[in-house]
Picture (cartoon, one colour):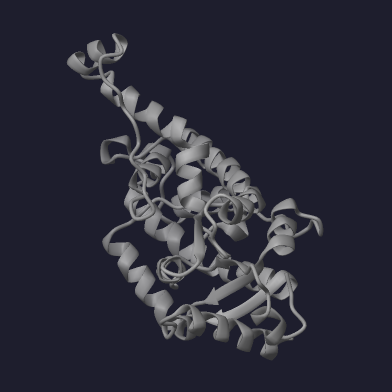
Amino acid sequence: MRFASGKEYLAWPNKAVTLFGMSGVGKTTLGRLLRKSEWFLYSVDYRIGTRYMNEHIVDSFKREAMKVPLLRQLLRSDSIYISSNITFENLEPLATYLGKPGNPAKGGLSFEEYRRRQAQHRHGEIRALLDVPEFIAKAREIYDYDHFLCDTGGSLCEVIDFANPSDPVAMTLEEHTLLLYIRETDDHVATLIERFRENPKPMYYHPRFLEEVWADFKREHGITRDEDVDPDAFAVYGFERLIAHRRPLYERIARRWGYTVDMDAIQSVRSEDDFNALVAEVIDKQH
């Protein structure tokens, strides 16, 4: 959704904004801040984990439990219940399920299994993004919130087909929300990479890009067998490639359907009024 002026945005009685950008630019922090006002916070990752991948996640827990004789007996007699306790602040069950490919002795998944789980995530993310209009309505009609904020995962740019001018995800978000790209600084990228090296985490890749990165990693490290790949080493390598890959895609989304704000400006937001004033200023500058 685009506006003729910042003033028009400020007059919008029921605002709906979609935040996107790299992990760590401040999307979730901003969401927590606005949640204290009359903003309904919709976390795409939370929706994926609780609605579209919950059964996959819980089934993986059950498979592990079935390896333990006592738990196997209790599960088969319906004497215990296993569930995933995903919250806005704790998405660990989803991240753990996605996993990392490579050496099983180091906790890695086979590449085939990894691709299968990546495909499940892609399906879940697309569905969660297409659910945005439904939750905008729920936020107002059920929970009586005036405004709506969608906190996307960093992989929004991976599920949009840029070759399709009528891509359903892009059209849904553009029709119902203002798309706001929070642009990172070069210094922030360096910090993110260093943090990731210390604690490599699972990521989502576009299928074609995953195949490319996997092949490049093995070639550059002289590895021929998938099971010889170190999962954490690949995760760090993939993350660095992913950052460079995603930046121009985020920029394409912002140019075609939304607006761009620097993360330094977002970090100075302390209230709902600050946020709305910043968005209005961005609209006027980029109109």
